[in-house]
Every structure is written in C-alpha cells, then in structure tokens.
Length: 235
Image 1: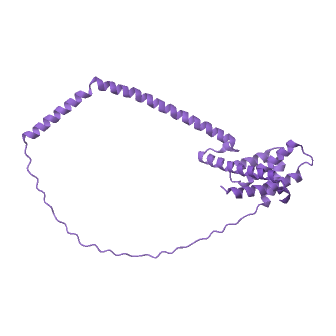
Image 2: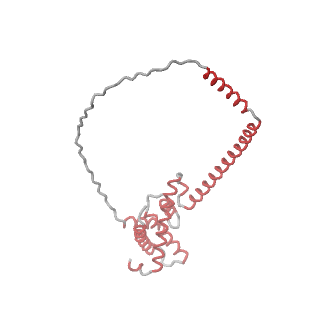
Image 3: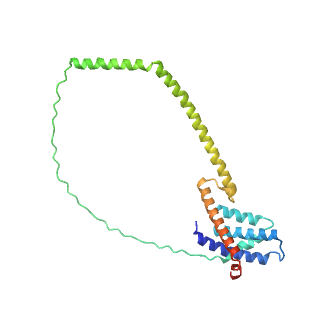
C-alpha cells in the first residue's frame, strides 16, 4: 500500500492528463450528463492506473474498455497515461561474508564413582497390615453402594439432559454466526469491483482496504480542485 500523499500526487497527475485527452477526443458540445460520465471515467481510470496489480483496478479497466460507449476513449486514456509514467530502476547490492573456523579444546577431569549399598529391612506380616487391607475392602464396597443411590442417578440424568440442550444451543449459535459472516462477505464482494473473483478472506480484506484508500485519495483531490479551480490552468 502506497503513502497517502504520494498516492494523491500520482492520481492528480494521471487525472489531469486523462482530462486533457478527453477534451481533445470528446465532442465539442456536450451536455451535463455526458460531462459527468467523462469526468467519472477519467477519474476511475486514473485511480485504477495508480495500482494496477490489484484485482479491483483490473476489473475497472476491463469494464471501461469493454463498454461500447466508453471503450475507445478508455483505451486512448490508458495508452497516454502509461506513456507519461516514468519507469524507475532498482539496483540490488549483494554482500559476501567470510567466516573463519574456530577450534576449541576442552579438558574434562576424571570422575570418581562411589558405590552406595542400601540395606532393606526384612518384611514381616503383622496384624496392622491385615487391618489396613480389610479397611480398604470395606471402603471400596461402601463407595460402590453409594454410587447407586437415587440422588446421584437424578443428578446424572439432569446433567445429561441439560448438557444436550447446551450443545444444541452452541451448534445453533455457531451456524447463525457463520451465516452472518457469509452475508457480510457477499455484501463486501458486491461493493468492490471484481469482488466476485476474490475467494480468500485475507485477500478480500486487503483489496477492500486498498480500494478505500484509493477512493479517499480521489475524493481529497477532487475537493481540492473544486476549492482551487485555478490549478487546472497551471497544470
């Protein structure tokens, strides 16, 4: 995306040249509606020629050139605009870096291992171990019996019913959100020229932002020329 000031300057130059071409090519006597069409065509082509790599700009150019009424005029405007633009050459510099290998020597001291002997006391079966085992069996039986109580059964059935309802509500909300996003996407595609050819969401947002910035530059330049019409004579 270009800078806003540079974009306005580029649009101003191209729009002035396109208006001069329209004055030479068009009819000597035009009514108000024909003048509006010529001004709109020249402004749209100047805006599209500032960023030709975008989908919306190519769609505007193809629409103007394929039209029967404005096809020849659009081709002449675009031909003269492309000849007046200056080509810039970019030079690339390559840098070479040399790396010197470095060798590092490390000395590790000898490690001494000490053997540790562990003595395990002899296991003896006493009365306490038997008591612990019988207590554990008793706790397991009680826990198994408590799980089958009617209160817990009611809680499980309630959670199952409300869990299913929550899942249905969530699924419905997701489907509604998807529909809303799809509707807004279709509206956005209809606003941008050539939006029906854009399938990716990221590229659609990128094209929209670039188109809005170009429209802002067009409006600012037109407002400035409307306030200061003498700029037409000096350009």
